Image 1 (cartoon, each protein chain N blue to C red):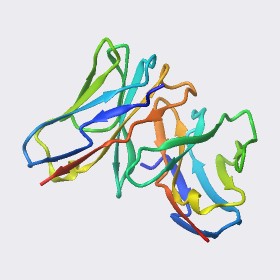
Image 2: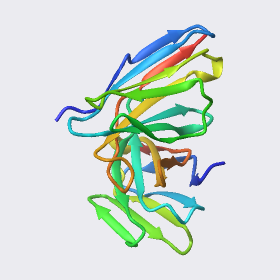
Image 3: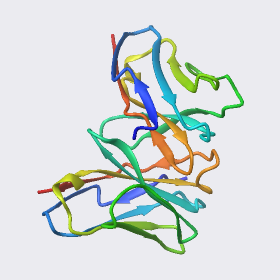
Image 4: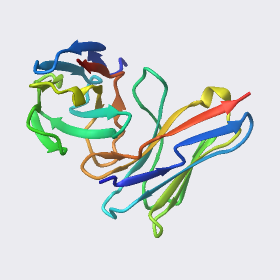
Length: 114
Length: 109
């Protein structure tokens, strides 16, 4: 079974621009969660989508948004990029999300904001 | 606020030794506690996980010990190998995974 794929793997953007990241979950998985990983803050939860609906949201500003399509693929968007948005963005897929179901992470998208 | 506290931040162990990483949590609503292993340039990979109704779980060289009353859990890596050198994250699940800050493990030959 193919794993979680994320595109692009690396991205360089300028402050003020916007960016869209993509995640394809494992086949059959309906839940996709997004996490931000930085050296200072570690891994922080952004949001989770299940069956095209945002089910949970972390403590991030409204500049961070996402969506999920009918095939479970998900995108996240960051508008008006700030230098502090530089991070590794990880998506994780699971069968149904929380409840003790294993979450499988993709390799991440490394975003650098200059 | 950090809901899961992890220690130590870094750890150096000799080949064949035991690596021990500790985590503590506050929220008693957490009901699933996984450990992840991350190599440079890769996403975290699930290593082993435990539920709070079990005090210990062993898979190969990896063991989780769980103390519900103390709200603590730990990962033991027996017979540590250089290939185990990676960053390890504990997590506690509520509506999402709450991660510890990570432990960088180096196993020397």
